[in-house]
Length: 125
Image 1 (cartoon, rainbow, N blue to C red):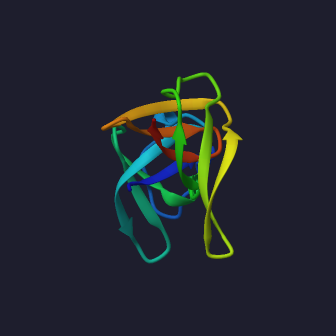
Image 2 (cartoon, rainbow, N blue to C red):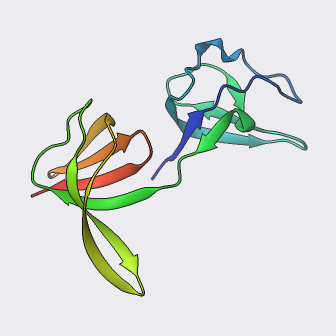
């Protein structure tokens, strides 16, 4: 799965970078390339022209697999059952996600669902 980062409003940089005016605070971006330098790592982001300091972003690390009875809808919360590994046992725990920000159809009733806090891979049954 691609690396997803959220812009945190940063603007300072050791090396020169592109102007962050095209970035939106709190918005998630997909990193298509990382360029490591001596004192800084730069990101090239999908759909945004330029290179940006990685310190300007927080990596989205929470990703869950889940099942749902309905297709998630942008702007609403999604009722689903999340798969979690607890004490080496897979458990299915019902949950209500935070507000859905983006839904991508991956195929075969499987969706990548991005919420305010988490990314879910949801199979609709």
